[in-house]
Image (cartoon, rainbow, N blue to C red; front, side):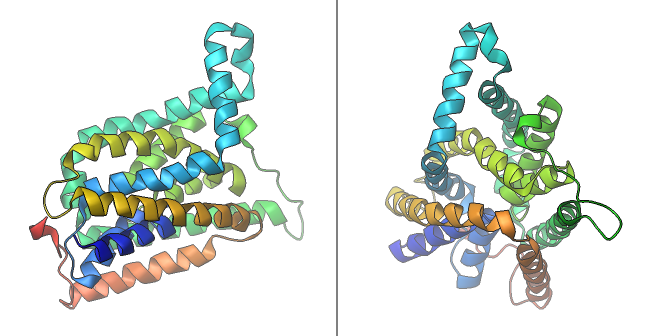
Length: 290
C-alpha cells in the first residue's frame, strides 16, 4: 500500500465511520474502484481505532462520568441505580453479541462477507430499514391531523433487553455494507428511541467493540501488501476527519432526517449491482492480492 492510498483510505474511513453508510463497505469499494488491493479487515479494524479516539474525545465528559459511576457502583450498592452506572453495565452487555459473533465468524468476515454483491445487497436492504425507521420517528415527532405527536424514549429508559437488541444490531455491522451506526440507530428508532438517544448510545456502544477489534487485528497489520507505516498514517487521518464528522453529525440529527443517507445507500447499491453485472467490476476485485 502506498502512502497516497493510505491517505485516501484514512480520509474515507474518517468520513464514513459515523454516518449510516458503512465505512467498511466504502473502504472496500474505494479500493475496488481505484484498482487497488482490498485493504482487508485488519486495516479496517485498526484505522477504526483512529475514529474511535475521536469518539473518546468528543464524548469525554460522558465517558468519564459513566466509567467513574460504574466503578463506584462495584463497591457502593446505593450507586447501582444511578443512570451513569447503569449505562456502564448496558454498554458491557450490549458489547457481548459483537464480541461472540466477531470471533465465531472471523473467517467469513475476512473472506466471503467482502463480496461486492453482498455489500450491494446490504447497502440497499439496510437503507430501506433505515428509511422505515426514520419515517416512523418522524411520524411520532410530528403527529398527524388527528393526533398529537408521540413522545419517544431517552437513554434513561434503556434497559437490559433493549441494550441487548442494540448489541445484536451492532453485530450486524460485521458484514460490510450494513453500517454500525446505521444498524444501531435503525434498531433504536424502531424501538421508539429519539434520534439523538439512538445515535449517542450507538457511538458509546462502539467503543469497546472497535478498540478490542483493532487491538486483536494488530498482529496482522504488517502482513500482505499493507505495512505498518501507511496503516498508522491512515489511522491518524481517520481520527482528524472523524472528529469533525461526529461533531457535525450530532448536530445534524437533531433537526434533519436520515433520508439523504437512505437514498445514497440505495443508489450506491444499485450502481454496484449494475457494475458487477456488466462485468466492469469483479465481485472479488482486489481480493487475490491481499
